[in-house]
Image (cartoon, rainbow, N blue to C red; front, top):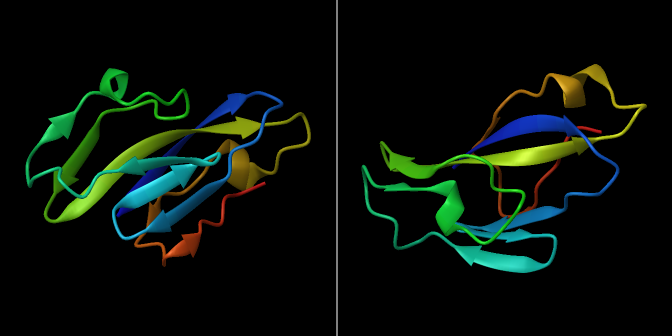
Length: 96
């Protein structure tokens, strides 16, 4: 899995956990296990305001772009985030 982050000046929170290809975003579960290789699921088909880019599977990896809320005191790592590649199952560590 590759999680891309798109920072945006907002005061809300993003909490993400993963179990294989199932993401829980702010308490809501999204199951991407059935997305086949090479497929693209438009962001508009995912009922989550934090999914801001198409979801795809490429070379076996699920690739998803999430909106990352950044407050006024956000760090450089939050304002200019690196991709999160192959995060372990459990809570996903997001930059603050």
